Length: 251
Image (cartoon, one colour):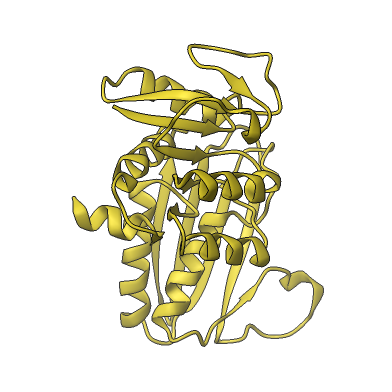
């Protein structure tokens, strides 16, 4: 039985993860962390990691970047693996995640969907073949999402850029200047509206032809399932940084 501490348990994603784990017989949530401790279910909910009194195997974090430092300190102190599915981290926070991975196993991904990670692989392949094509990324999310562009859009851009030896720059604000498009830029655009769960479109635009790769999430469950799979993946792993690439490779 995999024992999970769920950070952000009373948020939207936390509730979806809870529903998924409740349907399994090989995992259980032994404690939750949330600012809102009024909603207790089949497990105790705390608003501080220091108050947790139960033993666990792994932390799954779908909360807020502000929680990161306290969560990592707790995970390191207890020698627990951490699945970090929160987005919107600063560069400094990402460095702290990498530093923590020298002491504990950390699973970190900007997107927990297997489909998105397949999309990333296809984008890498396209980038190597479609030499000279302009690349644009459009991401769409619900009107309650705080960070923009999405972590997934950055993930896709990074995967493409790494494949192109880091020569690309990212353009977020093209309307502020009047000049032709730079051939070595990736345009990244954010749309916010309604209840869109998550849509990502990568456009490779060449001379007289356009190739579009896209992914559409129809519910939050696709991300929750990925996070739970990541929690099982971390069991018995040595310290290090892990991602969907390693999880997919084990399948």
